Image 1 (cartoon, rainbow, N blue to C red):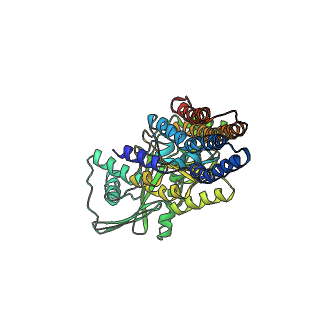
Image 2 (image 1 turned 180 degrees about the vertical axis):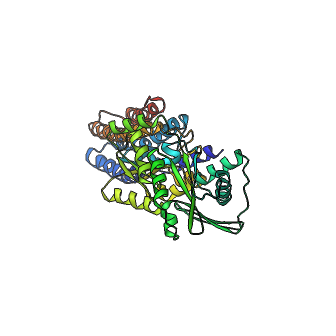
Image 3 (image 1 turned 30 degrees about the vertical axis):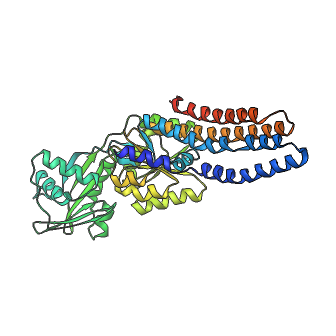
Amino acid sequence: MRTLVMVREAENKQAPMQRIADKAASWLVPVALLIAILAYLFTKNIITAVTVLVVFCPCALVLATPTAIMAAIGQATKHGVIIKSGEALEKMGKVDTIAFDKTGTLTYGRLDVSDIVVFDEAMSEIALLSLTASAEAKSEHPLGKAIVACARTKEVPVMESTSFKMTAGRGIFAEIQGRKLLCGSEAFLRENGVSAGASVRSVLEQLRAQGKASVLVADGQNCIGVIALSDVLRPEGKDMVARLADMHTRTVLLTGDHQRTADYFARQVGISEVRAELLPEEKVQAIEALQREHRNVCMIGDGVNDAPALKTADVSVAMGGMGSDIAVDAADVALMSDDISKIPYLKRLSNATVKTIQFSISLSMCINFVAIILSLMEVLTPTTGALVHNAGSCFVVLIAALLYDRKFE
């Protein structure tokens, strides 16, 4: 049902080219009327004037954009790609830089607890997992959810927190049975007056080198442990990035993960430009920096933290299957099957749609121009002029319809 609503919204939103064509058509009608009047004054032939009016009607011009947009949106829907507007489709055709989030986008986002490291000798791994899961129970972040899921799977007690506060992109504070716990990144703990010792940093470096995400746990002013989580890279990621490179499209990784973890995954897929340890507002700043370089930027993400960046980008794509509702609503395009291999397909479809619209508009204008000359030469009559006019409209619709079944993969 949600998919049908998005498709209907897409059909109701005009692309910039369509607005330009509609504006041009509003000027062409009085111009056609003026030419018809002048034709009558010079030729004294009412048939010539009527023929000019018949052939000059800008039907093909007005049809060029909406028919191509509808055909492209229809084709994309068949492939599980929901494009919310013609404007988004047209902008995607101009995109030269694509920024990716990591978790849930380049990776599956199905995080599993891989390591539980305890720094407090009086505490067991199970006790650390129980405390951390209890603190993270109200968190919406994928890392927190994965820790809670692990605890429930292992039937580890998950207690109710008496207070909870989340700092987006950083970590959480929760009070469990009188213990004031901080769970998050090293920077988050440092901001709250907890410093990680040499042994803690050594463990973190080892985990990051393995591409694992880490959640540090502090009780009061002491770091009591770290829980590491591993994610699985989507196998289609490397080929997708290579295909985008073949289309001369720049790729950038924007993530809140540590630099070494981000570098690990970027190397796996072939992305050379990495910006890590970013808060949601810093992702926005990174996109704005790219736009100041006169880049047309597409942002691809799946989480609540990605919503501001999705809104800031020229065009945005959300993972519609596992992505958050906020991210899907903020984005211009939704991948309903979460298949990132569709990104090169979307780019090719958008490029083809823009070229089809430009060709159809040029064709319609040429047909009108030739038809007017032939009308003034009295080669065309109102009857043959109507045939030429309708032929132009049919050509434009036919060219657009070819988009619907064209192979882009």
